Image (cartoon, rainbow, N blue to C red):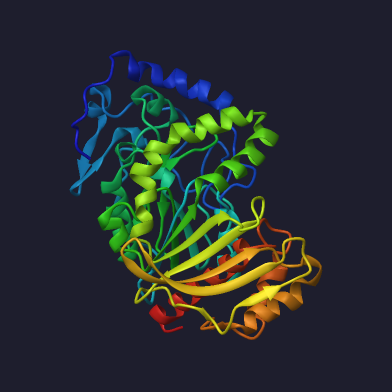
Length: 413
């Protein structure tokens, strides 16, 4: 990462520790934490030590003195490296095939946790709690860990976590490439509870990596290691409605505060996060229903000729029984310069008749490549999860099954 920015005020680095402590008082965790963002104890498993502030800000003279180079990789001191750590090292765990890398790009609060549970169900595996969720088959890498500054440091620089300058893409790309090659890495840790950068943790290769966060498709090198990429696209009207529902109830905010927070993030989101949807292989898009909010129209936008195994519908469907009812249809479109086929669900199914209606939908899908009634069973298993009544749950479950299909194809399982 280039040191092209102007130097910070002399007091910035010294203030970072105090700001970090103050940050603990105002931080509120999301109600449903991501599988890749479990709550921390004072020591993270496999990490180098306790959660304490580094007191460093990038860029600053204090940070520069402590930053070092190793194996051609810049180890920024803001990542809290221990002296004996290397960014990439030989693995102790050997695999029969290269790991399958799935990228999931999305803003916070968009339902990634439930989606990841659906992926685990489709793969027939599970993960253990921890800052980085790891199981026998799958590891979830949260790319927030590559924030180059901690929360206090970002207050000092005046830049948001969405800003590309606040993310260590050189390290991210090198480590994702190393994991794809079957090597181990010491991955940085961004502690969401404290706002600090904890000492890095050892990550061994695994059969599947879900690389999720704000920027998995942004950097060319990181993107080139992905076997399939998904972008979760939430239009502003839906995002505002969701944030109001969450933040007013859980944080005591007013609607005006929610709107101000969205507007504050919007320029960086538009510059650094939203453009990734042009490069994604598949897009899950949320729009208001034709009947208006709170009902949703959810679109599965599948790029033609890409790595995502496409589904189509035999015919349009109309389902009744719920207040809104539900319609499913298919059509082709140009998606930001790429031809795509869209499967769209508008409205909600009848949850009292869920099994029968999902069976009807499943029988109408071509190319699902699952076992009989697998989609129905997956939906019923997570019936009480958010979005199970609309296209959120249905199309997340479809994507999860497609991730398994990609894994099976690439590994010969």
